[in-house]
Image (cartoon, rainbow, N blue to C red; front, side, top):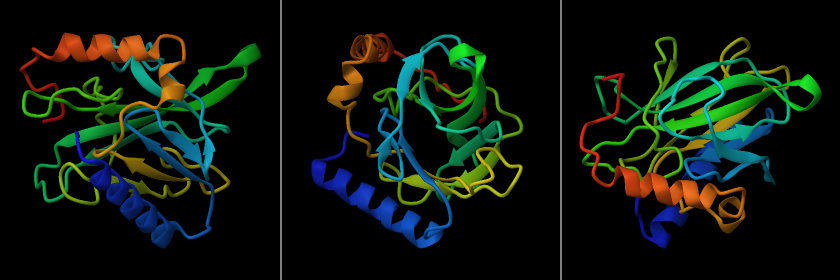
Length: 208
């Protein structure tokens, strides 16, 4: 994931162009990546790193985006291009939590796999939760420079009456931005996670 600035720009541009071509103006477009950079049609999304509200990962804080409206809960699994085994590299989990004054709101939790050959270097690198009913979608682009587009039909994870659509950016994402690092110890959590996992060797993917 440690790509040059030029590669990062090309990656982001490619996915934006792909999203524009696929989605057009059909509905609100969410763009989220593995390092807390997310927006709804250009408006930044609230993001936190903290305990997993779904209980999917209990060994590490997870990356959580708060969505501005309710969506259908469920899991979307991303697998690498040209992988016949469809081993998951990322999972985006849509989940409902109790917000302010008990109002239920939806969040999107971004989980990413890591291994000895691809060590943890992003906020989403927590390993993958058990997700037997995940909807599987193929990533776009080569390893190290990819993502996925998701336009859910009604009733599928992430869908809502407004026709919400998603641009998930997997690899080639920038390090956490300064705004995110200033939020309540997120920078410290990121540093601790990287130090703790420098010596990890087993592959964390339970889907393989």
